[in-house]
Image (cartoon, rainbow, N blue to C red):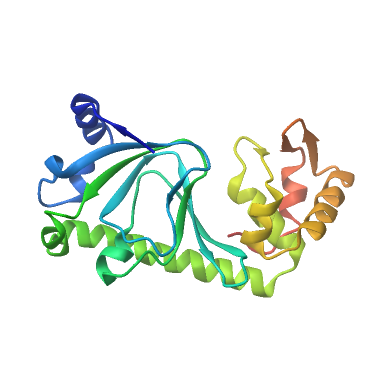
Length: 222
C-alpha cells in the first residue's frame, strides 16, 4: 500500500468521482488517497478495521477463508464502490479478506473522528444499503448457479462475467475457488471449448471466437 500525500490530487479525485454525493456531511479532512498494486491484500479476514474504503479505480475481490485452508471468493467489485461498511455497521472484525485484482486507487476514510457521524449520515446509509442489497442479490445468484447447474455452465457464466472485448485471463486457482469446480475439471472444459472452436488460447489469455455458440451452452449468468 502506498499513501499518496498530495492534497491537490486527492481533491481532484473527490471531484472526478463525485465522492461528496455519497455523504451528507463533509469528511474531506479525514480522507486519504491510497494506492494498491495488483494482487496486494487490502485487509485480511479477522483484521480490526479503523476506516472504510471507497474504490475509485481498479477491481477487488472479496473472499472467505475456510478452516481447511480453502478460499471461497464471495464477489468481485468494480469502481466506484464503498467497502468495509459491514465491519462498521456490526462493529466486528473483518469477516472476509479483500485483495486488489488489478492496480487500484482507494479513498480511505478514518473512523477515529467520524464514526458516529457516518452512522447517522442518511445519504451514506442509503448508499451502503444499496451495496449490501446488491451483494445479497449476487451472492444468491452465485450460490444457486454453483449448486444447481453443470460445471460447464458455471465456467462459461464466469467467462462472460470477466471477459473484456471477447478476451479473458483464466486464473485456474481463482476460477476454481469462485465456481467450486476442481482445477483438473476446469482444464478439461477449457480444452473442450477450444476443440469446439468456441474459444482459442493465445499467449497469456483466451479469446472468444464464437460468442453466440458459447452462450447457447449456458442456462444462467452470474
